[in-house]
Length: 383
Ligand code: NAD
Ligand code: MG
Image (tube, rainbow, N blue to C red):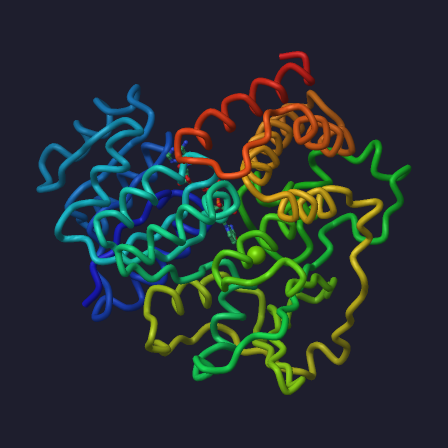
């Protein structure tokens, strides 16, 4: 029986993780759930799963959640700091980081320091501070199990290959809703168009990141840290059907891939259940439904964010942290109709040029870099 804490239980990954836990009550027990502001869903989840503790990050909802759960044996906390405290509870074995953005960094650090195994969905944490996180995990003998479908695919390809070094990995990208468009055509695309992903239903931020290929850029950096790769070992190929979830090439030239229908419950379940493959009755993939699986080069000139992510990784230090902070501000501005689709790349590029570069950042440097980059990005937007 694994006892699980879910940071971000009300989101796309969080609710799908709860489906996995609901279907496997003999394998998992839910100890902690947390949400930012969706108090009603958090309460409904708490009443169904009876966790030990819940956290609502936004203080103003505390009284409402507390009253709704007052007849239950469930502790209710509020505030960002409580997210870090609940993951340290002795009854928690594994923490699923399914929050979105930089806010996931500190609770992930506290979970690792408390020796909790990590199922990592919150890729921004590894983009911002991959070196710090992976070093901490080593020190505390914590494993980080990938939830992102591409990284789960690579992890699954590596099973049984412990002594065989990776030659390179190939991350697949769907290409998003704007695959094949020119920069001219992208100038006036709307938020509604960007929010329509062809293959995956996800939270708003990652859906915009997928449309701009930023998501793939973040995943390149995520992969570097998860699998201890050199930059030149990471390739991206566009695969619009999202059936081949990613590939690993070994020293003999052989390539392994993991395939399946696009459904996040599969990688979530693999991370939570590892090393077991739990039985499921999700729909099965058939080649007859997909007679053609196609592959093409990503267009780095039109989708500049992916190139900027490669540049940030090459530069290292706090540059990926700058990239991430600028992107969080830019995506939020795009979702509020304050900037156009292509302006998001301008904001990233400008922040990467202007914010103070630090080659060997400490935790405090990351905190300050994040603040400075957000300030710069907001100034560019005129906010
Ligand atoms: P989402 O927006 O649907 O859900 C985010 C969750 O985090 C919600 O429960 C929300 O309440 C909580 N949250 C947001 N901001 C918070 C804050 N400041 N403090 C505390 N809690 C906060 O997002 P999602 O699509 O589930 O994505 C979550 C993470 O998983 C992201 O890092 C994303 O990149 C990654 N991911 C998602 C998918 C997917 O299919 N959705 C796939 C791979 C990776
Ligand atoms: Mg992914």
